[in-house]
Image (cartoon, rainbow, N blue to C red; front, top):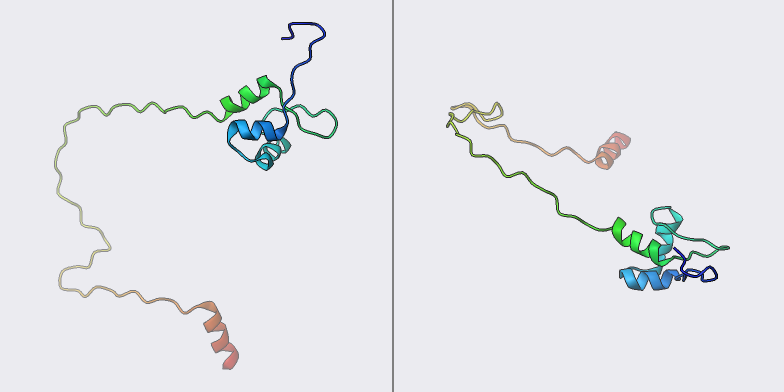
Length: 112
């Protein structure tokens, strides 16, 4: 809100906003260009009011997330399940082999 009818709000340059936020001037201009932060654009230049700078700070504010405390539950111990990929007793484990790179395979086909 304007206090005096003749008083105009102060407009800040992107370099001023960047210093206040601890970012680069390029970052401020890029965020404004992409419409991610509020700005004023009289003519061809980006300018920012004090209210817009405060809103930018609020936009990038991080709040802690509330995590529900786990409730005490009774745990029944179950026998561990055997995974299907485990080798059966007495059977040898299957060894994995790396696949031939595509370039090498193409060169072999061209040579043949």
